[in-house]
Amino acid sequence: MAEFFENIVLTDDEKDWIIDKIKPYLKKNDIEQARAIACKNKKARINSFLLQHLGEEVYFSNSDMVFNDEFNWSLLTKIELPSTIKTIGDRAFFNSSLNEIKFNEGLENIGMSAFVDTDLKVVVLPSTIKSISYLVFNSCPLLSTIVFKEGCKKVEIHKDMCVPPVDTCDIFFPKNCGIVITDDNKKYDYKTLIDFGYEKEIYPVMDKIQFY
Image (cartoon, rainbow, N blue to C red; front, side, top):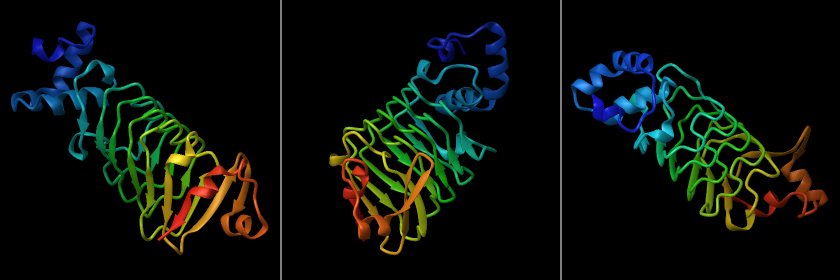
């Protein structure tokens, strides 16, 4: 037991509380799941752990949201979201070590700055996604591709969803997907902007959109 807590700064009461929650995993010597459960219950900071992967079986058991700031500044490199998640909150993975994420079908909204300054390379978004907020993929220098899966019918994306540097990332939509570009409280239909012209400096994301 002492080995489990050696890198975690907790009070004795917090340790006792966690032990009750994670005993079944410790008995199976499943340290990774035990640490994930402790993380989820907010009794220790995830960046104190050696944990690098969270799977569906140990996270968000009854939740429909990744909460604001939940994994920011963490050492987490990989996560698989369960089918219950509908919203990823603001700054949820901000400045974390995340380089791989598997989004669930059922996810609808991604909040402001959710993946800022992460190591993501390729992002595949589910067909259920409805809105992507301001600076979601800002300052992700390794990010080369964002794909919206087949079946995505309509989605709102902020004009600054992935800048800077937007010129390193291509964004792919299904050919029949309706796209709405948002700018604070204003909304513009993508096709209308194309037909009537737009300023590249104001809507840099427009130049990266492709259809398949």
